[in-house]
Every structure is written in C-alpha cells, then in structure tokens.
Image 1 (tube, rainbow, N blue to C red):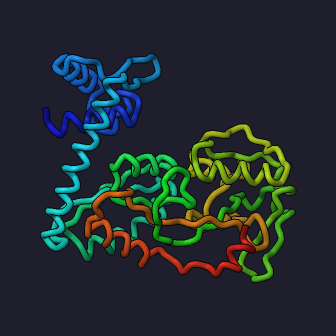
Image 2 (cartoon, rainbow, N blue to C red; image 1 turned 90 degrees about the vertical axis):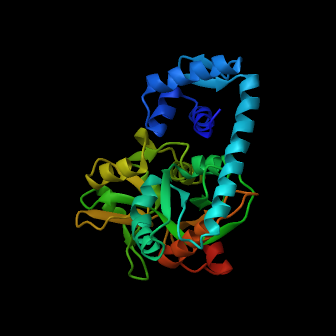
Length: 313
C-alpha cells in the first residue's frame, strides 16, 4: 500500500464522486475506477457504495478512510518539519482561497512571496469559504483565506481585512435613479427596498455571498425577484455589468469600468471580515506562517474600532 493510493481513496471520499475525484487528481475516470476496484479486491472489503449520483463510504470504508487521513496527515507533518530544517530554502504548502476573491487579491501577494522565497512552491486550492472549512478540518490545507465568522471551525483566526458587500449594476440600469451620493463623496449607495423591484442574479446558497445576499432580503422583509439563483459570483457580476440584472459582489472584486457602477447597501456600507485560518491542532510550518505574514503585509488592513463595527452591523 502506497501513500499515493491512500491519497486516491481520501480524494474520492472528499469529492463523493469518482469522476470529480479523477478531475481533481488529473486522471482519467476509467483509470481511477479501475484502481478502486483492484484496491477493494486486494483489501477484501468494499470501501464505497456506488450510487447513480456518486459514492458514499461503507461502514468499514469510513473506518479505513479515517485512518488513511491520519497516515497522510502524519506524513505531511513530518515532511513540513523536515522542510523547516532547511530554513525556507525549499518545500511546498497548500493555500485555500475562493476562486472569485483569489483572482483579485492573491497574484500580487504571491509575486512578492516568490521573490522572497523562490524555492517554496504554493499549491492553490480554489473553493468557497464553506468548503474551505471542510478542507481545513480534513487537514488538506496549510492555510486558508476565508470569510469570517467561521461556520464549523472553532479556532483562532488572523484578521486580514474588511471587505464590503456591494451591488454591481450597469450605469444605464434603472436602479441608478435611486442611487444616492455618499456624504464622504466616495461613491453611491442605494436602499435594498428600492433595488428589490428589479431582477437579481444570485450566487448559490452554499456560498458566503449567496448567504449574505439572501439574509439582507430576509431582514428587510423582501422577496428577491431572481431567475438565476445558483451561478458563480464572478458570472453573476459579469451579467450585471452587461445590464442583465443586479448582482452582489465584494469591493475587493470590483473591476473599474466606465459602464459599471458599484453601490453600497447603506450609507455606511455592509462589511464582512476576511481572515487567515490554519488547520486546528496541526503543525504550522514556517513556510505557511511566512505566507500568512506576506498576505497581511500585501493585502491586509487595520481592524476598525469596536464602535465602527457596531455601526456597520
């Protein structure tokens, strides 16, 4: 039994699908399916139940998968400690981040990190914040940039920055007649009650942005007019820029375009916190800590005062 084989099994369990696991492992689905059949035959017990829409572990399979995770985690901990002995002159780490936010925030910080530590490779895993928590719990990430507060994890986070939840609209969209200049002169804001009469394009329920947007409607006692309700945040924003509806996005992901307007949802804005999370109860490599420091240096900001936080809620 090899570590690579255990990685295959754990990946299938995490993806709950042989085809998705094969995509993640850069394998042909037929090859991974054949491997699993041979592995189960050699083991003498089935690890997964096959279903029309995926797989799930058998009782014995769940026992095996848990121990496979522990073996892989222990190997990676030893590997990281060995790399640390080399004084950041080699090794790799895995960073989790949402693909939408990461495409805007991460590249400049990674460029500086590679300039300072050219022999350390950063593997990027793109998932939404909720899925990133699952990966942290499973020990497959060394560090993740997530939206706070955490849903499942109960661990310490490093504050990174605040990010505002805003509306994106084409400047010709009729919602602009309800836009009000901010007293600070820095942009515009609109009441959700005024915007709710127009069609919205919403992200999926299992994303932070999708959850926040629906909560705003619920707290205002409004029902959104939405025909597309499970598209990615990036796709929703792109459609809104073309005037096909209104969409929620983040200030950190706002692309400056002459035909696009970004509107706060209150005069003072609605904000969430972004934080850096390390997996609980695991060894934190010097490389992961160094990357965290670089992210805070490049894209972090200072915490707002408690009085400001109260005004923003």
